[in-house]
Length: 160
Image (cartoon, rainbow, N blue to C red; front, side):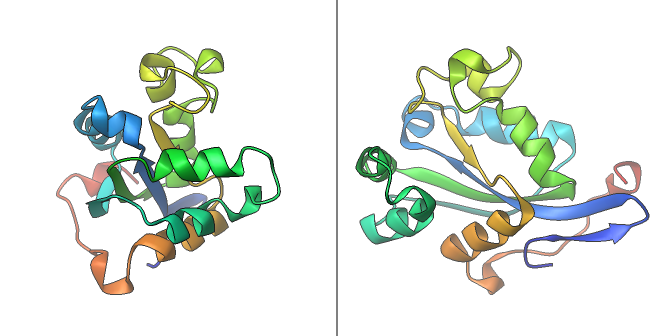
């Protein structure tokens, strides 16, 4: 499975892209983010840490290229290490978006990653794909096909 999903009745298993931003790494919240996704029953199939190149960041945020805040987005995301992850599970895109909370942390519910740890619209800890198609594009931007693992966890029979 490369991104997107597959149907098994009404259940959709898919992969989604998640990035802990520089503020999340600097505040030592990577493990907390991973813990929450694992506790939810999602499976980690890809993981990297790197300082993103300017060119990659521009591709990542290309839909905002004409907006006045584009330069700020690129500068922020390239300012320090980030952690890129690919998570797999039932409706993974929607699950992760809900767990992350609203983009603006002041509007994010308590119990979400951004609601619990976000400090501002920009310093909101985490990014996640907003749709299965976006997940496919973002995963391909950061991971080569051979870098994602296919494996089975013992509890998967309970998570379908």
